[in-house]
Length: 364
View (tube, rainbow, N blue to C red):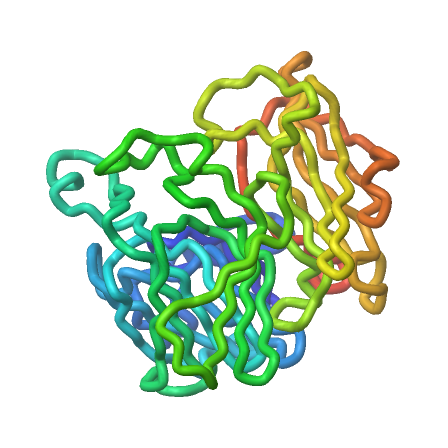
């Protein structure tokens, strides 16, 4: 993530690492915003507010492993913490992403719960506990958290937000959502891993804060199965219409790859338009499996979704990786360019496009 002239590498169990944006040299391996950040953790999914220039983020298990504490921060356009508040969640678990609107912040708490006995026996941090409900929590930006409301829902799994926005006191959050554990490498406590229940579809969560409601509403926006949704980041926290996501298209031939890629072999990148509903896809070929994609605007003032879609494709015939570049408005036309790398990269997720105009001047 690049903000206020600083480049950060992020991992959600620690503070940021500050890097030189030109050389990638580590400048500070425990960056705490001049000591102002008191949380032990910081999200790998901050959001940049295109209106205020703020970076808004949070840290979960913020007072230590298995704590229910979440710290929420706003970092202003100059890179200084301008707002901090703390809340408690219903139970300690993975909170990989969150939702930002112009007026509110929202968290979806899913049953990927911290399991201390499992850790004490040398196991991993989380386990899927299907006996737990999901919770959707909403609070105002800039406040002390006392207005926090929790809405209860059934067992669901979602880790990534495409985008979120407010209309008055109505909150809308679009995410890839499944009905069960999406991660086969985290054990399920009460049932076997089920690939069908792990299959996520783009789903809209909504609540009306003016209503006296106990639960949240769900609407499946599109049927293709996928993960890792992205959007035109110039519209983060604002009403929007276009997003992108790698999907698994069962009608297309798929590369034979090792099991464990979140249970899915992603063979297409898709563009989703919500109103009217439309999906178009890029199929790389049967020899490829696709990683996360990233949208790059054609220019700073280009219309929403006008630009390029880029991402890494692993070629299992050559055993090398390639960077594929597409016209984001015409995915079905195929690639504009393929940059062939001399090695095969591990499957990786999450990056952000930073234009040369945003970077500070290169050192002499």
